[in-house]
Image (tube, rainbow, N blue to C red; front, side):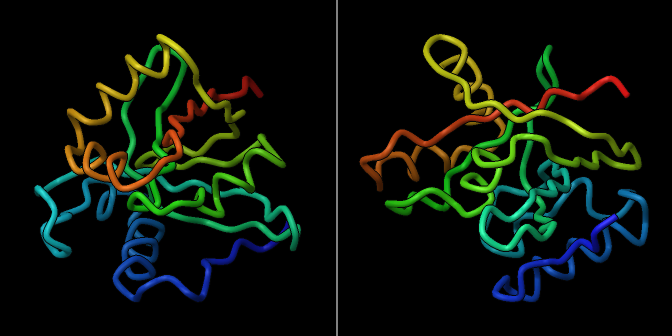
Length: 153
């Protein structure tokens, strides 16, 4: 199995969050205290591991999530930047990903939602993290909402 890397360009607080999540099997890190960056408080996070579309290396990031009937929803906001985040481009190229939610680890297939499904999940995710609304106002792109559907192994 390939070794997982944490992108070196990430701020130290994100790298620390990942380290604590992994070392504690999700006990410390699953509920992330976003107030450290001016956020609204505790938010549920998962660890997403994608395969780099250029490097082929496994890359891990923590992301806010919501539970859905099909799996887990995540938002490719990049803070409202004009381009998609690299992790989203990676999962478009390689939709099979690895996920950790608390101590639970599993493989999943990522898919971008559209239409009514996207609208419903967007509202759900905005209820979890209100700043997504502001991020959408900052960009002309429609911010993707992705479902991570666990694969039965």
